[in-house]
Figure 1: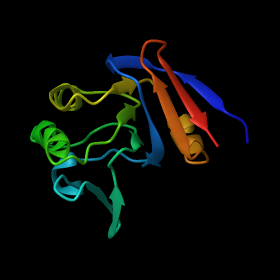
Figure 2: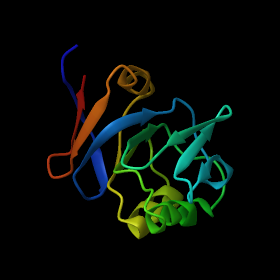
Figure 3: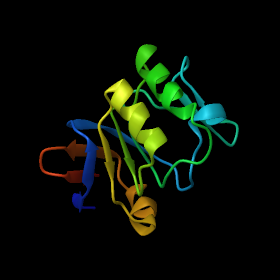
Length: 133
């Protein structure tokens, strides 16, 4: 498999890289993320967020999500970047508070395809997400 590049719109500036954690459905940071452990709870599994490029379509749920994102940073468990189809004000506020690079603009088809890659590099200045095998 070859490297793939996707143009994204940078919402919170920054460069980042890390292993990919992709989830195909909208998430709620309140109730599905444990900031002290740094995990996303999915179907009874705890998936580590620390240092990952966390990719999902969009948020659903509570305004408290911004504070959960900040708590991930506070406890040293933040993802290196968050990439979504569409960023909402709750996600943007949380990423700004936690200083986590945030980009939007990936399609649902791209989200399912991203799971085939293992590592991602976000080049904030270029508005580019590079996916590596």
